[in-house]
Length: 317
Image 1 (spheres, helix red, strand yellow):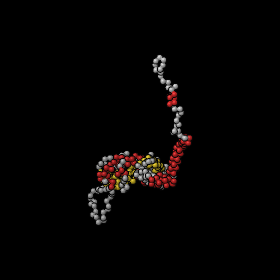
Image 2: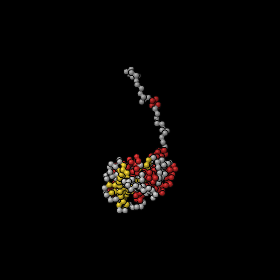
Image 3: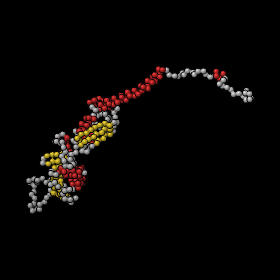
Image 4: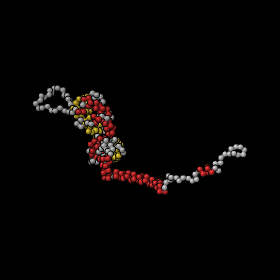
């Protein structure tokens, strides 16, 4: 008690029991790592970037090797066989760029594969060489685009017709100009067989319009072997059976449409006729094949009868 009668507060700092109750020293830390563990922990921090670097270098080396092998058909062939055996990734898309004169079917034949076949199941280099052999192809590229696309880029030659003048045959473009670097062998000989033939002076410069008009009537076009320029003004067409069709000047498209209409209704182009004159807009004159000569013992015609031309008929439009 204090002298003023108030209770005295305990002095914890002076109380020996308090002082003896406090711990005199810190207990040892049981989980502290050893020096060896600390050493390896530091080394692991240094080793981890090195491992990542080695993995990246390994992937890059494998990728570079694959690209190197893919560049050579001889080196890539064994790898392609293994890839096909392991995982036959199917072709789902074939993209053809630059196709004009070349048919799609001929490109697929030359490619050597098709949709649904393994993308590694054909030789890119061999396919390119086969496509280069097609008549209207100047050069081509073929590439795989993973995982399912084959891309073909064509650069075609641009002839639209064969022009015959003074016994010489020349490939021409739409402007009537000669297609360079040509001959009568190889791909040019095949092109000669597939292109329309235009004949005569000035036929080269006037060919594109009449060829375009003829292309709109495929039934008529399939029967035409030549388009002959007459007087540098109009055209005659020669059919495969030898029939000559005389077209009106400047009205080729309308004449082809009339021929197609008559072919559909009366099979006019399948009949044995000599010529079909369509130069008049309101009629069509058909010259039929002459009748065979009568046998010697046949009755002679009456000389008093008026002459008649049985080999010519006129068809009103």
